[in-house]
Image (cartoon, rainbow, N blue to C red):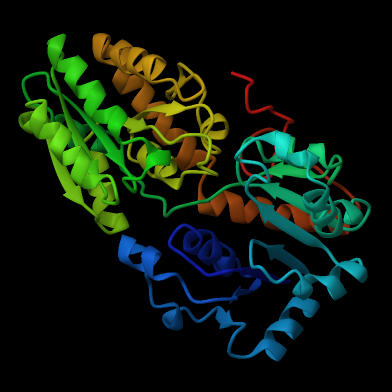
Length: 388
């Protein structure tokens, strides 16, 4: 069984899924990278030596070979690549293709009225609605966007990004968190680029209010970016130096180490966050997330009140209220922490996604579509961005 995954470049959020496919004995797997990674991403710690990955081919070095791999694949996973021409022959031949996409209309679904945009979407997606092409939705609102352009009717499934899974013996993760906590202080973590769409300023505003109300907490902020200087200035001006630890950029494994010692994950990205793999990482580390419902990953991964909390439409006020509810009832944290971990360890992880991918293909060869009830490859419901 030949599986080919084509995308702009391979990164640390894709590698675990790719390696999980490659480990399956029945699978001959190849990843095709269509362009070098941008320097900004490399500086963020996303850089890796793709040359050392034996299953990676480079379109910009040998396009002829890559085109042959695409045509000969039993199953093609097609991410974003800016090379729609690479798929034309395969789609025309009716060969099985699974597109992977984030949202079409992050800025607002009103953009669907653009005639030029509709024409492009028709060519790339709607015109193939009856072909053997399906959509893997990397975000909870992707299906709603594609529904607006009448693409993939009945053929949209949940997907996402699958960072490397860490597993722990019974009680091991809880022990790490208790070692960090002292004198009843609850440790929280925020991680990401310090840019406007991720709202790091919510965190300093939150800390100021929590301190006024005598909550016992400490916030770990991981990341850098254009707003870092302003965040550091706010911390100093508000007299919050003792309540914060700032790390700058860390490599992904170091970020996980920080998360393991924290109880709560503060996920403040706005509606422009297509997925947000940091949420997977934090939940895998047993952090209870407080997340904006507008982010792509949050409605797929979080069951409100069970393994995390959602706040409404990017509202700072609701965000603050949800965080206070956890700090006021710390007895809830251990149970919710365990549920957050199990969500990733049992469902939303690379190995499960790979096995469901193979199962999807095998069902397809028998003329069946038999998706799981939840997790990767379950049916993607039409969820409007303002549903919460």
